[in-house]
Length: 399
Image (cartoon, rainbow, N blue to C red):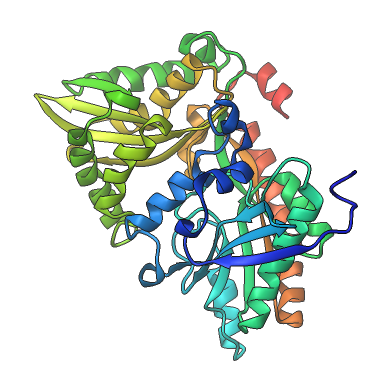
């Protein structure tokens, strides 16, 4: 019998913690491929990653990310879940809605709290409506309706699902949600045998620039290590914490992740991590933290305690490309913003989000804004791609 069309007893529950659902039950929806021994397609929606955020105190009501995860059961079987949070601000989301908040509040409304279906602090595309195979239509619909009903019951302004897949965005739009398109820079692996094969696709000037940058970075007077799995040791996190604090203080005022998160990462996430550590005179001076998906390397955090020319580009972008090529990964997602990535082979790509706004007139106004924004984003992507570092024949293929 088709599970999508049969009449079923469907229950949507709200869970105040990942501790309220067994890891194997959550992961059967989030990463069913892992049950066969494969690497999870998305490391960020696994039970172990999301629970590490909670157990470390990085995510809770105090930090403005109060868990209210959704679970959909059909006749007692969990068929869909979603990581959902009550947000008292818009920090750590990377899909910017501050102007929406100001507009609603200036009109006498209240924007916060709002509901966010997302992976906290993580601007990486992935499924947000985590549905078991065979339950896609029913599960996704139940999650969307459950989130909206929860927001409506509590008098909340909105529901947002950020960095969802394009497929989810299209399905959500058919359900009446607003579809937003923004952009991010990704590097695509075109089956390169090595870094030189990638360089061969660039214009001569850009190729020379990257070679010079890599040479300058290697002249920092030390060694660069790529560490994953059992090669990761507590001492690496002691050093990286200082890097992360420095970057956090510059960007956000205070870091999003607690020190405890990195201890838990060492215990439960080290096989999902590729950590670049730059060592000089027996001391770690810079590092970049990446997470490994089944076909994607996700660049997340960079920091340093010494400044050296081009070391940031090497640790964050070129080491990531080396790793992706060596491990046959199809893409590197280098995180939010940063047009400086374009010259290093990272091209603009659309990213998607979905939005439900309770106030009809406000929703109509935002919908009109999103139509204009999308036209501008599409134009930006086209223009930026045309200015990419690739040879003319390659740029024409990409366009």
